[in-house]
Image 1: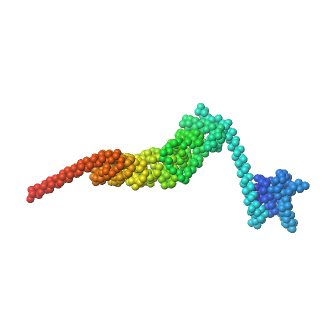
Image 2 (image 1 turned 90 degrees about the vertical axis):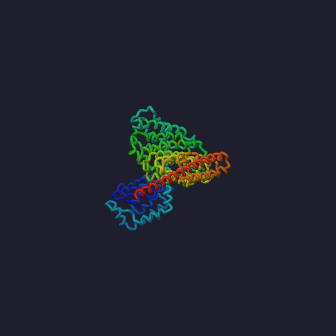
Image 3 (image 1 turned 60 degrees about the horizontal axis):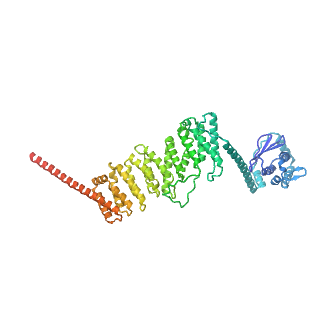
Length: 587
């Protein structure tokens, strides 16, 4: 209950239904705003705490101002009963009136004081705690909760009806709208039509799981989207003002960002499943992706202004769409994300952080999806190619903690080519990163997965070709050759064959022999075992060829070593004889 300090008006507020009741004391009238069925009774009972004159004024005015209380249903809800003279109050209300009258009649002086206070300027304050407790006792906790629930349900019903009417109006506007054509000139009228079409495409979102549902509206909306793409593509988008950026991004977010189907708990990666899994809404969202692409390429879209609309939350949701099963959508996302990275320098660190989180999720979480991993690695490869030298600690940490652990993922075959591109750019930028990379691959070497072993052997061979003529090769040469010897003992013929092809590189073997002859001896012993015990005849033949080459190389390096030792000994003898001759002449 709340009373204003106005001289002529007392306002009662119902907390149950947000209803205001104004009593014009001098005019003797009552006006109620936001009236509801059950709030009428609550306000009436609250008047028992106020003066007698206000209560009588309310009783007299309610019968003239609210004729709808003649309805039987509303009378039952309010506790009001009809009489021969018109509209009256129920038994409970009459009893409360009599009690209030008896309470008021005990002291006429108090009533007269109240009348005098109404004609003057009284200081009307908020109700006391005892009055509030009286209200609670009259209404009751359970009844107030029930009335509140009824009010909320009535409000929700009214809002849902209004929303349905608004949606129906928008659907009619959509069907009646004509799309913008490529030949439409740029003018104020076409700009107003552009904004209207953006609003329609933002508000009307359809379910594409059922092709028969709202088919005409879907076709009409796609035509409007194509018109939007044509409009924004004219003159390189120079005519698109900043005031429309927020509406464009809002429309794109409403149509693209959706919940992707969840994966089952027993989800397994299907490495041979390269079939296209089309998205039902692809004909629709393809145009939206094209609009986003053209929007980023607009000449009027300055990164300093557009960063307020292309936010980090927008980019994070965009990266989350890489989990889509439709490869066409992932290709669009790859191109768009790459252009966002190139244009918005303020978001570059955030994009790299999101990519890092995506890779760590795939590496360490069970049943993670590999969709979009190859496309994101392609983006990262181009990003790495633009790194400045020397490499920052952040970039080196990403190699050690993110890219190298990706080699142990079960579905490596789906994205190994793109992963190798990233690694290749790292080694080209900094040769010292080859040491960390080779040692990391050897540490994470698979035990039973022969296909992954073959892929990693190919990757090691490429790394060796990049760093063979550098001094850094000596730092990882010994662990690499030792690991090749272990691969020669593998029972799988493809792993042994790939290792033998690695050793058929004569230049690599000569470099190894020149730096450490003991490693050649180690390889010869392993090749003898392969030639004698392996079950595959092709592997046996290849091992014999490699064995003969390494033996000749070992003999050649051994002879060269003996000749070098002999020449060094002769040189020392000549120096000693010359020293003796000098001493004899001096003596």
